[in-house]
Amino acid sequence: MSAELSQEPSAPPLSAADIDAAAKRIAPVVAPTPLQLCERLSEATGATVYLKREDLQSVRSYKLRGAYNLLVQLSEDEIAAGVVCSSAGNHAQGFAYACRALGVRGRVYVPAKTPKQKKDRIRYHGGEFVELIVGGSTYDMAAEAALADVARTGATLVPPYDDVRTIAGQGTIAVELLDQLDVEPDLVVVPVGGGGCVAGIATYLAERTANTSVLGVEPAGAAAMMAALAAGEPVTLDHVDQFVDGAAVNRAGTLTYAALAAAGDMVSITAVDEGAVCTAMLDLYQHEGIIAEPAARCRSRACWKPTLSQGRRWCA
Image: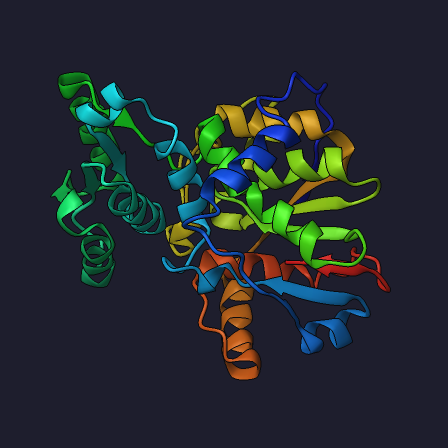
């Protein structure tokens, strides 16, 4: 199940120069992550496959990149008014870490079902600078509570993906990829939820490489970006499978969709089912010793798709 970006490109919401600037902005806090050769996937696919180890970030995901890039650009008045986010996990941890690093007061709205381990990690990263608030029984209710807070207090909302500052920060992964490889990659495989990471990476590679393709991978039970491509605009899914919780969104971002459309034919989107994700998680743990969450493993599973050409250099 895949979809090509056949819509007419619109003006991109950001540029590679914006992402280069973001890379310099976040450098004091976000260390480059290793690009690790995966011999098992390389042998199985016939390509040279590298894994970008964003799981080794201080918050265990790439989400710190976007949150910090947004917060560090706020004015003194915006900082004084505080910042708010809604999240059930990774974005909240990145937000909390960035708040503490910058000394900014923030509030995180989470759904009641958020696991204790994730709540503890949010509190750990944010320390005294972040207040954790249960905003309802579901993520949508938590998001509504965060918006109500913004309307009431004048705080700045820090979105997990649909903001050019967030997208630029997440796109800094591509800056590192090109620095770490001696040649341009032929293919970069990226997990897709709301689309911030894939939009940033695609935007950067579209300008900075000649022949690199980007494959976005989302869970089949929450294929919001594929639905948007089929409709020609973001649409709201009637049902979302929550298994791959880090990528389980019911609507792709407006800005992220526009960025992918602007990137044109270099980008395609595919989906993988729950069983394939489970297999990828188990294989990575057994063979590489990598403990990964479902959203991150969508990308490694996509490397097994028979439609991908062999004998190439891939990053996932």
